[in-house]
Image (tube, rainbow, N blue to C red; front, side):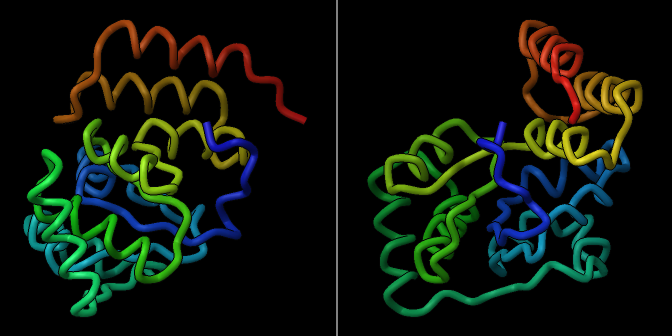
Length: 173
């Protein structure tokens, strides 16, 4: 989870995965937890099917990379096993001095963390929605199960079981 950071007060950069996976389960509204979500034209291109829906979110802003940030993205593409969206997302974190990067790609998470950013995925967004009382315990379990059953997110049964235990064990204040 997010080490207790209250997401309504933070900015984050989103890669395509969280946008796509939340939309697949009709939970894109959970992005309301964020003060501002930054993304790049390259990431939006990966979300072409749902780009209109993403652009309707009031807290989402598209940002272009500076020349220096484009160079970093190119370096990330060449040095790590990232796609263009992931590389531009991490470069945008550095450019805009944003601490949180949301992606569902393991390589991108590791690269972002190695560069000093906190990296989380769609599951963390859902769990945080529960912690912040946007969802009840039962709603959260249903959303997680729907993510497991009906999204394109690579999600193992072990991870599903662990996530359900986290929901069950969490004590709200």
